[in-house]
Image 1 (cartoon, each protein chain N blue to C red):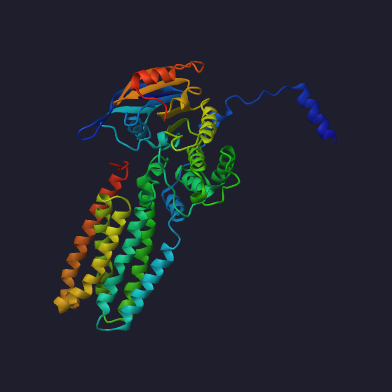
Image 2: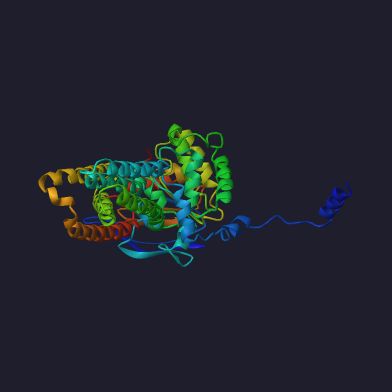
Length: 237
Length: 233
């Protein structure tokens, strides 16, 4: 009671001027710096939720089919990883597909860093899955660890490289559909190639697979760099 | 606070969309009038740093357009914008607030304030696909204000709105020019006639009028007709 009276008396006795240009002042002091990992954690929240369980389901299928049939194990392993890469590519092209790219480009965080953060998050997740699958396949299937590793990574990186090239050249839905088609072609090319060249998945051809993996790695790195460069500017005509 | 634009040019293969534009803009509402195809959108995209100029420079108080510091104080409402299909109005604001670097608690508070400012507080948790064109535009201006911009760029904000929504939107913009450089592009004279402090006109990629504007003047339409030979839509 006394407090209220005292407060009233004080406010009557001393005039407090209203804040001048408060909004302008606040505008200059509302910056927040984000660290690299904080940015990645933030972007993980905005990757479509079903991408994570779908990646797990596809990986489980790779493991199941890879251990079911001894004869066709290698190409089973290689047939599903293009679809994991497709998940990354569609996530990459989502802003353009839904016309959010112009808004995102004008935001404080550069679009390159945002897309990089998402790609790093998804890429690390898929690498972790491959890291789990490789020793499990080596133990439970007929292929060795090195074979399992290259059969998982080569079609994945090849799809990623071709997908990035396509989405750079073809905008919107058409680009993503083309990526889907490429993933399907790479997926079925394994079993088709075995019919033509039965020794394709034999251990003696591992060196060729290694060369193909190296080429796919270089292509994916080049395409990734070109994509990131391209993202700094609106692609509109 | 000043936005300096020097000799800005954008050349496409066979067309010069913006041709050596030099401007100095300060706080207040700057109306940019021009017919369709005059180069307004290209100019605005360059001012937002999302299109690289062929030549020239842009800076806000000495901060270059390509820097994060510039984008940190920029608000932009493009002519056409989309949204992720599963987004509610609130999700949309929180997502863009994250990209603008606002902390989650600050973003939530700011999104609530802005939904109220644009009279969308009752539908903030509804999917954007259920919104009318006017509601989407109001949500668009809300996202542009998330970071309390010092430079606000709005490109044809009233396109596709009915007359009532257009007036509502105009009143909303009119209240923003005190501490902010607002650049409002339109080809509709009445959008800027009563609210602009400064008037710019653009034709064939060049600025053909650049002068302070007296809001009591009523001859803008006539001026526009003389320059473009067309009228209000």
